[in-house]
Image (cartoon, rainbow, N blue to C red; front, side, top):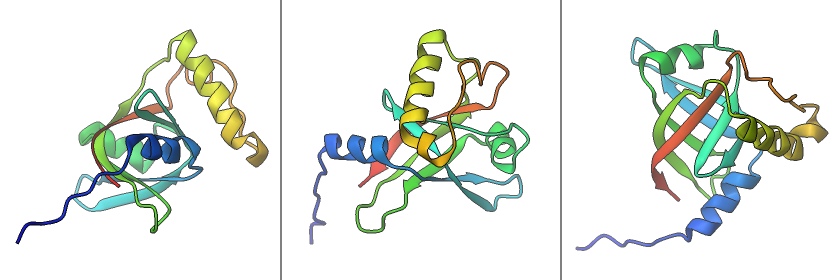
Amino acid sequence: MDKPVSYVDWNWVAAQLTDAKNYWLCSVRPAGRPHVIPRWAVYMDGKIYYDGSPETRHAQNIILNPNVSVNLESGDHVIIMEGISISAGKPTAELDGKLVEEYRRKYAQHGYSPNPHQWDEGGLYVFTPRQCIA
């Protein structure tokens, strides 16, 4: 018996990723156990950018193993992605401006409004998906 295949319009997926408030990231601890955390993030240019201390368990995990899965909260409108998450380094002035604008649009009403150059010394990560199930 053939397995049914269906496709979700990528514009719908991109809209969900753009508008989502919470993203769940799963990395792998050095001992091989999963580590899941919620993050505020922004989706731009096909990638998910999020921030946090380089000292967190998640940040330490991706140094050793950058393979990560990301999913949104809804169990009814499922989006699960697998890919690579790494430190984004110091963003260019253009990217920095876009990130600040998008973070403020999404999270200022929740008390988070990053400043330009906030990530100059690190703490910004980028997830690049290689597979999406929606």
